Amino acid sequence: MSWLDPARIDESAEDRALREELRGLLGGPTPNFFQATVTPELVTLAEELRKEAQRRRNTSRRKPSWMLMAAALPFALVLTGLGAWGIHQKQRADVLAQDLARQDNEHRQQLVAVSDQLKNERQAKEELVRVIQKEDPKAFRRFGKELVIPVDRNAIPAAANTQQVKGQ
Amino acid sequence: MQLLNTTTTPFGPPSDFHEAFAALYPRLVSYALRYGATYPEDIAQEAFVILMQREVPVEHPTAFLYGTVRTLALTERRPMKNKNLSLEVVVEQGRAAEADEQLLNAEVRERMRTLSPTFREALWLFVVEGLSIKEISDVLAIPEATVKTRIHRAKAQLRDLLNPSGGIHVLA
Image (cartoon, rainbow over all chains, first blue to last red; front, side):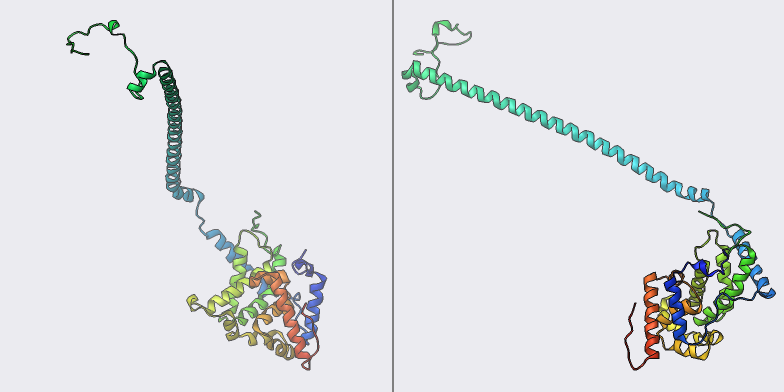
């Protein structure tokens, strides 16, 4: 399709009707856009412009892509290095955090175990106190609430380098 | 990405390019003149060179040419960009009237001058230059809906001008 063909602008019938209406409102005839006289002078000028455009296109310096890549290489290397260092730091931090969490978990488990043991021993002591109170209330009263275990003195061997004190 | 063949032009084979150039060049010179360009011919030629220099073809070469001419003309008018001049002020100070006289008769010129510059620009491109709504939106770098609105408001202003005693018109 030639560029002069009115269909080139792909106008709707509504737009064309609007243009005709506006031409009517303006009154006088407006010049026809598609009428042109091709004179030798215009052809010569057109060819000169085309050659000038061609000349400019040929002489315009395009920056080679490898130069752009070379210019961007240091930045890319720095960014890559920083990125790798950052990833490494992140991995280290993750490992340390996991280690810390594991240690914390172990300490909590140990605390629970110790607490249970302490509770059991406290219960055993209370049970023993109750038994002693039942067996020998007098001794329990004399020593108060202290735990007193009757000792068979004969069963205790004489300690070396000790001196017997009277009344004891 | 489709690259432009060196033996063809944005308008097709060289013969089509010659036809397009013959039709568009005077109009682009006139369009540059509307924006007050001191060297409108140079601007129109530069626009053609820029278009054909592109390796990637544009979708609407005509709109690209008009947009480039508009930009180059305004840049020429505003060498110091930090002046922050309004585009409409620049257009008003341009030689739009001179450009109009080359293309339009007195009656049309008078009616065009009654319109506000924003609406007149859209109307000019649509009716006088024969560009489509899409092409005008490319040239002015505004949405198609805005172009349509401007054209319909220009139509309403023209109707008001033709029927000053009143009447009802509908803004589409």
